Image (tube, rainbow, N blue to C red; front, side, top):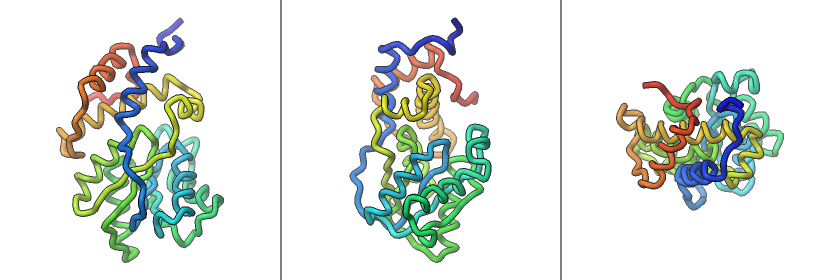
Length: 222
């Protein structure tokens, strides 16, 4: 049996959950000026944005994202376009949604969304970033670097680790992505892409051990 076929052990799952919990900012939701739904493979982001809009948490929603190798087949017209369509189907008025369909990374998600809002004449002082659960901390750190004059809140679909794995259908891939995002949280500040985030020792140890165990498909080779 190859490494990619080996079952995930309970110990590995426990370490992954530790990293998973660290990725989430646990911000308290409250009304904001604007929400930005960050494009990805996870259509749950659009669904959660729709629910928050219907709850009255924001009047304007930006969906941002072009395509990546992991989403081109799933969302051939671009992440933001498909997210917008899904949100409209769930009851969000088309007029409440702005579209940014060129971003290819999180930095561009933030920068290009700012440009779309400015072009629409919208000034925000509070912004809610809605992302995949394990992307909250990275999106927060990136936005604080690139948009320091607004208050940033983060949110994601409230799923436990095991439930998210079921929704994706590939536990090894989820572990790879959780590990890959923490690499970015650690390394991006060194390259000026994000503000630094303190990583607790137990989280860092879990991360390093998961790398040793081979959960490396989403790591960037610097």
